Image 1 (tube, one colour):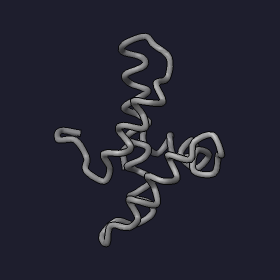
Image 2 (cartoon, rainbow, N blue to C red):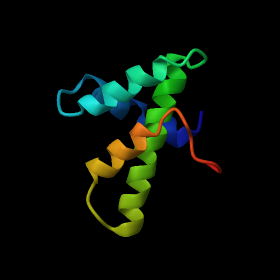
Image 3 (cartoon, rainbow, N blue to C red):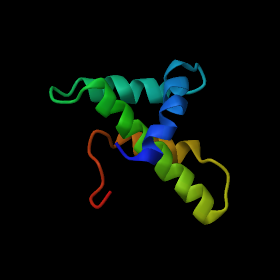
Length: 83
């Protein structure tokens, strides 16, 4: 696993248990319904989405966009090409 994604895993764990981010838990549970995806891989996918939103925040110098984050999560388990 990429070092950046590993560093985001504590944030993912927090989001999975937070009442403020039920969409993260929903995405996680949906991903785990796939037969070949294990928990650690599912969490890495969530971390990838969080990293993508953080990168967009920094690049565009804007606040966190939870709607965009939710959209990216909704696309899982399909991962974008080249990432």
